[in-house]
Image 1 (cartoon, rainbow, N blue to C red):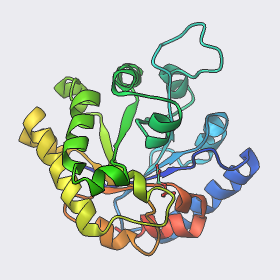
Image 2 (cartoon, helix red, strand yellow):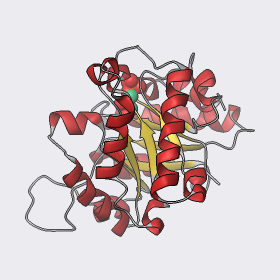
Image 3 (tube, rainbow, N blue to C red):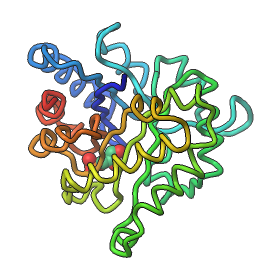
Length: 254
Ligand code: 13P
């Protein structure tokens, strides 16, 4: 069965010291306060802090380490790049792929993302694959077509076994970092649509077992309402994951 997951995407924020202080507060608060909930927590700090932050996570419990990107090749002369295998070797279990910031600022397209997905899976990482429409697309009433194409071109080339490892994040671009959250109905509608597409591409069981997270200005105030929707299995949190109290409250929202 699918899991409830709250993932924190730190993006390009914090120093090592700030990040260590942040994660230490989060771990303490969650251990003290979130005792009843079965939610898995994935922390995605910047590359240079992965090892150090990973060492601060209690082993064998609800905390897991994730990266924000990986290169599509296994090794080689790619100065400045980081492979999936490297991430796995420092303790990462997850990797965010297809984030709209990577698509927009770094020109990552479906073809490249397909290769990155394969590389991540080959290294034993679980991809958190992001999809989401722009405001323009939403206003043109093209959201479902757009999401369907992102899934088909970027993700549904995977085999059943590979797809089993994938978590999907629905992140409407207009809601990211804007303070403009999707309403719980808007989120539910797209999440249900995504699940339907999975059932078509794979089968009903795969659809039922895939965790689909919402991302975009999710915070301590709106998380409970979002997470109460039947097809919303958690959140991919940006800004609010950098505040220990807010992130803990989001985790406790289940
Ligand atoms: P915000 O929560 O800051 O809107 O960011 C969402 C996001 O992009 C997570 O990947």
